[in-house]
Length: 119
Image 1 (cartoon, rainbow, N blue to C red):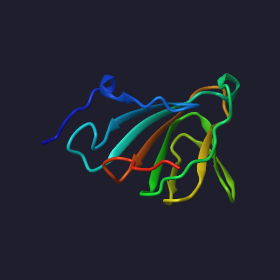
Image 2 (image 1 turned 45 degrees about the horizontal axis):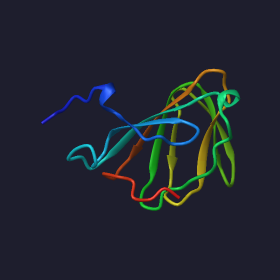
Image 3 (image 1 turned 90 degrees about the horizontal axis):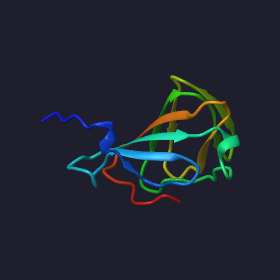
Image 4 (image 1 turned 135 degrees about the vertical axis):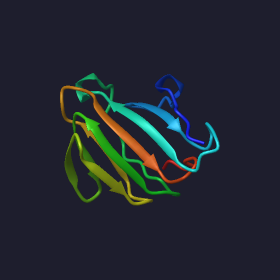
């Protein structure tokens, strides 16, 4: 049965350098996917720059809702704007920086019920 999840029901994950809210996951219901809304503030407002991380157990799909940013890997840095989509293979170190003056808003999708590892 279809379900509507209200924005206020998303769980704040308390991750450094960003506001990450888990909207859907296996921990919040009988779901086989994970969906997060991530807000990265402008770098001038952050205490420190974000560090690379990777996912051992899954790929990640990132959709840019609004703002400007830079998607960074060991090999390259790609500029991001609203409407861009990033596909991240599992085990690839990556991070996203906000290069604009407004928050960078991302929708992050993982095809697993929960992230078991975050390296």
